[in-house]
Image 1 (cartoon, rainbow, N blue to C red):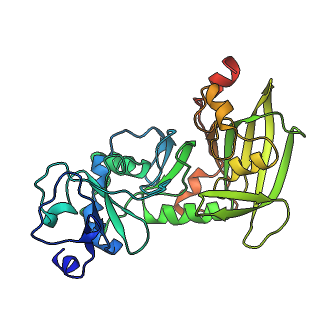
Image 2 (cartoon, helix red, strand yellow):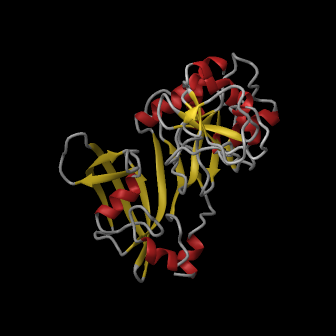
Length: 329
């Protein structure tokens, strides 16, 4: 920390930080420090994860988890901005500010950080899983040779459903390979505005990602930097101005289902980014009615230590918006 103070990489209230300065309530600290500095400090953040994990299936290699709506898959997912930390105690020295209890560092870019109150940031799906396995005695973060549990896929914060996690490096390698080869089939349920015609179809389009806006755009024709997407849908049921669909995700791109369905004129109910936000909120839907509800292992090539999973299918029976679709809409 002394080195960064000398190099003017720590600022207080936009001015140079001085080691003798005593922080006061309302002070804003800005750190322009490399990411590597913080790795040791956040290693055990998983112990602060508040919630439990809803386990669908578990064995010695993998865990299938039902991620709840509103929960981040990883720390940093869905972040729009980085924030500032105001010291509330009035007597904290600058020396200890960066490692103050209850704070986290959120990166705006590779070279600058600000410290933010972040009791929320540790409560992610991956941290809940780490804590679960730690408490079972299957994960020891203090053993530098031990594999840290990892997610093989992720879902948007407000999308719920099945997430695959690996307990060891070999399982993660195979899962990543099978996802790339499309040998793990993923199916979603969603509610959309209107009724798509025809009742089932395979849609092909091109997705352009705009990172600065945190959204994507869809084109029916090839475009520069556009990624090919394939979305297969089937109408399960229709009620008035809404339809329940099953969607098979043949390519897994950012916001693919939400943006693709909106592009063909049938945005997801509750989707504030691509849908009809004001109208949906009146119905009580404040986030998208979208759930990754079914997973099927369809290996066409050798899967090593995961061969036993071939042909197995896992289905969520409790999807939060199904009751609303059949009884409230």
